[in-house]
Image 1: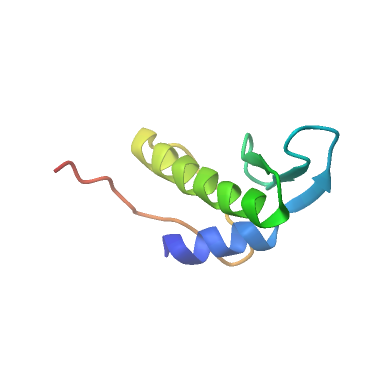
Image 2: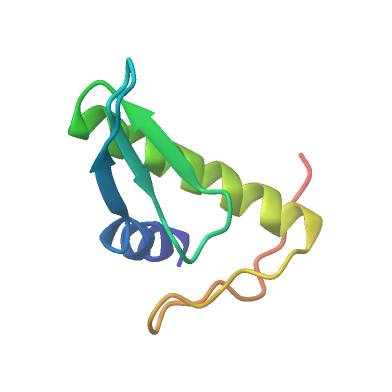
Length: 82
């Protein structure tokens, strides 16, 4: 379920080149605050995936609403403390 959500988020990512040390910028418009940059497009995409994962974990842990992406939803996922 989470893997499918992350893959769907990456499909929806928008990328652009900016004037910066890390010129590749990517964001997922449907996920507020989810963005990354990198020296290459592949590095940017890898970092963006890590940001999405962290955003999901934090959202689940805090019980925040996670938007549906297409037909993909994240429901009834609970964090288990070890």
